[in-house]
Amino acid sequence: MNIERDHITEKRKSPTSSTPVFWKMVLLVGYTLLLLYWMFFAFGRSYHPEAPYRYNWIPFQTIMDFALLKVGSPLDMLINLLGNIGVFVPFGLLIPWIWSVKMRHFLVGFIGCIFVVEVIQMLSHRGTFDVDDIWLNTLGAWIGYMLWSGIKRIRYRR
Image (cartoon, rainbow, N blue to C red):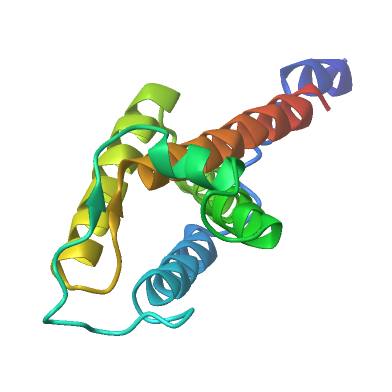
């Protein structure tokens, strides 16, 4: 009798309850620092104070230049396009794993942060502000968020 009631009222475990928040934050901060290193110092980036600011405000220009091989090789195209998407998927997985956030709020916050990073890259002469990077990075974060949503649904069903 009591056993039946306990079984019926047993709450399902939240998919976020198994890992302490501290370790989730360590993952997020560590990955963020690694990505900032890549964005500002790795892959041959160096400081060129005499160089003019480099930027692209025209949506899809850089994407089309790489897709049509106007710049770089096919490997450069894959690295640029898929890399700008793939490296941001973990943010879409980690952030909703740590904080319960609606997709709209997540994307608005993400776009704001990426915009700031792109501006800092340009102003620091360690990269280019490229609106296409914002699109591609956001697509990666969105894919991660959608993966997280799917994982959460599957775990709640069990």
